[in-house]
Length: 263
Figure 1 (spheres, rainbow, N blue to C red):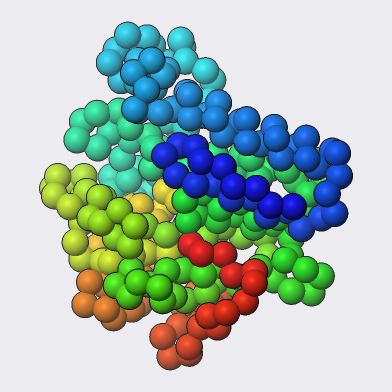
Figure 2 (figure 1 turned 180 degrees about the vertical axis):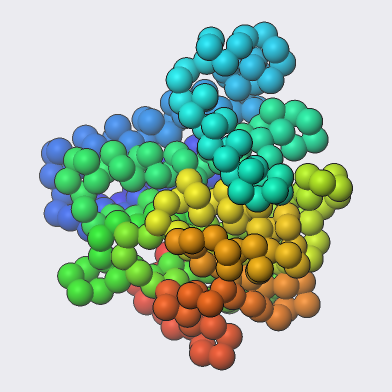
């Protein structure tokens, strides 16, 4: 059972590997509705959203839906772990978008799992959460687009019950800023992070990209997280545990497989 939804300014795709049933269809509909509700709460493009109003000082945190406090607390923790390279206020303006998408995907994936969809993937704008297996005995495989070679894959992440998030220039150009300098981050072309939670993977990928050359040593020190990066010159680096998830440039990625999800 598959579904594609345009929300949050990007495309979310659902792939549920179960026979369609009334219960699962209802759960999928609820997950889609939840994404739209989250967008209404957190969108910085909607002047009337709680986050926009909070940023302008029109309401307090107590006047926002409770998940706003949850997300902002996650942002604070990500900022602490990354020495400020992750921020919920780029340019001094409240904008937790760097946390919201991964958190939203994790949230709706949990909803599907709670409804009995133990084998599924949710892809939010290229950031992917997979649960269970693609098929009995076969892990999911998530294709990571090469940031400098349109149409090519840099690697393919393979596994069960994991999250894959990529930050880079492939889709939106140089859009991530180093919060410490205010200038666009330019050392890397992309960073892919693999972790158990997409909430964490997405935020840490953003921080690593902003961090640039220092990201490799930093990522090596984070438990339960592996990273793969492509530099602006086209070379690549990866953390010590990454090869258990996917091929490195010394091994050609398997490009064609129907359960490779473009990330």
